[in-house]
Length: 388
Image (tube, rainbow, N blue to C red; front, side, top):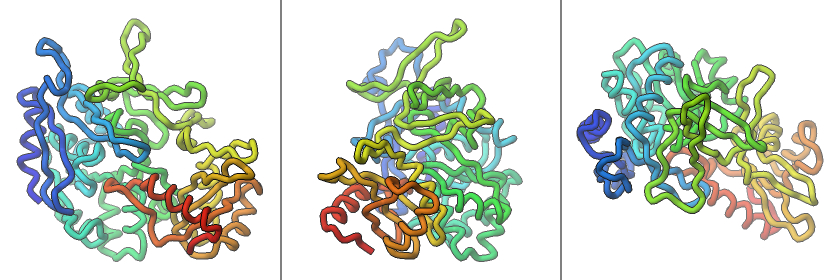
């Protein structure tokens, strides 16, 4: 894959010598990334504005129409510097994610700021352990990093070869984000001697802004009415064209202006002051008047032996309003799953509809395809016979 034209355009945008870059999905899977240059006029910036936008990133679209997020030079620079501080150094990055999403873009941006050459995994056959291992073996820097989503790490740790384990252990850190990682996956990775760091963030915060529950330097985290707010220099300058429901705001704090982004997630701080993400605010299931956290159900189902991945959502019910439903990657039957999960979940939290699949439907980012999963659950609930 040839990423040199993209790197050149990004370098010029980050130095203020070129227009903003918007990366598109490749024309064919595994093909060269394509990009367009976005003018200040299209961004809605006046010629005398001091804001320099370096990249325009599409949100994942997992909960609606993708938005074009404007990431400034300053925001990307702040994110890169604070990431290097958290990882205790700069180094060489392996790109194993699509470049048109923020986690992939950041691999390239961090490489440019570090002055190192990123290596790109051959994704012509999709994400495979063989392709990842081959690419990781090409890294030459003593400091090595990559970003993955949980599904990718799961594939790498499913019957891994000695070579795959070796390259995984050579990474100084593997950033894991994009979706919640199960405790089982984290325990397996760390037990194998792999340094996995969970990240929380989104396109609107230049990607991961909280590492293992701790905000990056300069990032602020607040919980307001149960919802997570992220603030600081990594917050985007908004969406191209704005929008009626703008989650961005600017507040004064100690004489300084702080940009804030209101996320769609619920959270809390644990006893050590670390952020704990409790799931999306719109993933609360109200069944028979009881509020059920989808994240809590996921946590309980992950404790059942044989369960590898889970997505929990709501399906309509004439009797209860909504009922809990789950798509599960693993072994067993709906009956055996509910019986085992009864040791970890209260009766009203047990999924009434269970669909077993070989793999969760995914977006190109590796995130669960929320729309496809909810459609699958709704169809199974209407059929009245859980699929297997």
